[in-house]
Length: 83
Image (tube, rainbow, N blue to C red; front, side, top):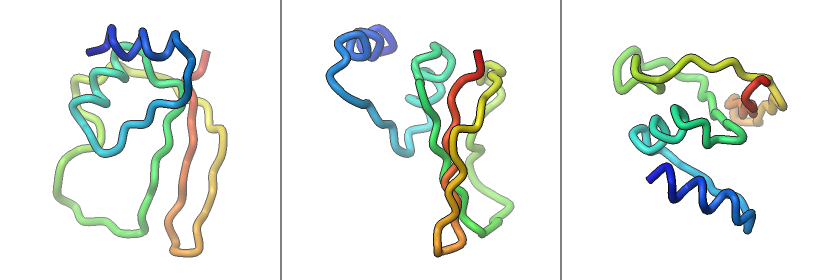
């Protein structure tokens, strides 16, 4: 799977988005195949549920590109990997 995603990125025919797939995201994150991360934060804390990132994820430093508050109280944070 990571090889196919890398091939598609090299073709440069547009953006590839991943929505809500923890396993796919983990694989692509660990392979360094994400160019940008967009995280939506909702003003609700449940205290239970699946972790956004597991212990298997390699540590990565990120640079904030944009912080956009929404009228709903949510916020969209955009990051890229720090070089």
